[in-house]
Image (cartoon, rainbow, N blue to C red):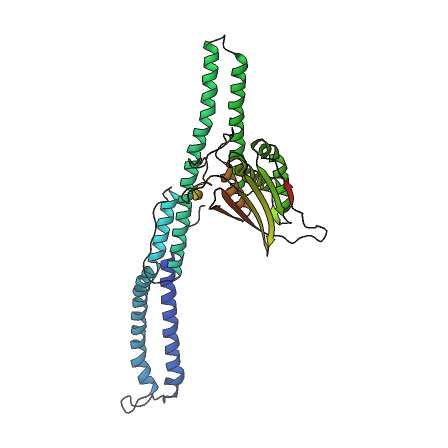
Amino acid sequence: MRRRPGLSARLKLTLSYVGFLFLASTLLLAVVWVYLLRYVPDNSQGLLGVSPNRYLLLHMFAPAAATALACLLVLGLLGGWILAGRMLAPLTQITDAARLAGSGSLSHRIHMRGRQDEFRELSDAFDTMLGRLDSHVAEQRRFAANASHELRTPLAISRTLLDVARKDPGRDRGALIERLHSVNTRAIDLTEALLLLSRGDSGTFIRESVDLSLIAEEAAETLLPLAERRGITLDVTGGTARTSGSAELLLRMTTNLVQNAVVHNLPTGGTVTVHTQTHGDTSVLRVENTGRRLSPELVPTLTEPFRRGADRVRTDEHAGVGLGLAIVDSVVRAHAGTLDLTPRPAGGLLVTVRFPGTPQLPADGDASGGNLSAPS
């Protein structure tokens, strides 16, 4: 944005100092005149050396006062300029850091020294902002690199299969088509997951009142066939838990959590429990599953995009795209919620999601807990 040139803040402060000093000096002279000189007898027509009089004092005091006032103005200009420069030096540091950040560098910090004041507070806030931006940009770059790599893999496989089919016309076309279909399905799933993750990060969605208990039941019904094939018992318990947000995104979040709990479970006979409840002004969704023991160092990294921990062993043919918990984390943050991942001592994972609750409508009753189970 172009602006017309104006006075600098340093010059404005200097002029303010000088103006205040001039006003104070003038007021002091006025006080001397009102309360002192006006009561001295005026003897300008008589002998000047006989006694002090107004004429004598004015002619002696006025030049000295004018000289003193001029010296005060000069000293005020010089001192005000120096003082304003010292006071605004921290602001200059912050401005230089902002220009450097605007050029694309986010690794620098101000680290302003000295006792706490407004400028130090602004500096600390600016350093915190730079740290978050640096971390966010690094995460986005890492995500872009991983996404390009993940998308490149199915495309490269498709090209290889087509090259093989072109060089070998007698190859079984049915097997080739089936393989291409599988690869393309994975590419489509990955693209949809990337779009959903981007939508969650942007936070651009219409908010409405959503009951997490109904969302949990719908997600469980969708994944019940998968649980039955694996012999997993899938339970939905708890009551009404209302929050404000996108029903579509919250359903995808819950589906990802339940699917993740089913896929990363015991080879057979495992359990998955989905529980919803309202605690004060907070709506809570918990998904707990049995499974292999997870190391505490692995758990904080599970929400990273394309994270497929070696300690988490899938027990079916689900390959996944590595964005399940990353999408969950994105949706939770977009709804101003919190996500806690806790490894169970006996094995498996406990996921707790908390959202700001909304008042329950009088017509709504508590959702009764359901039990969707598959025999092991």
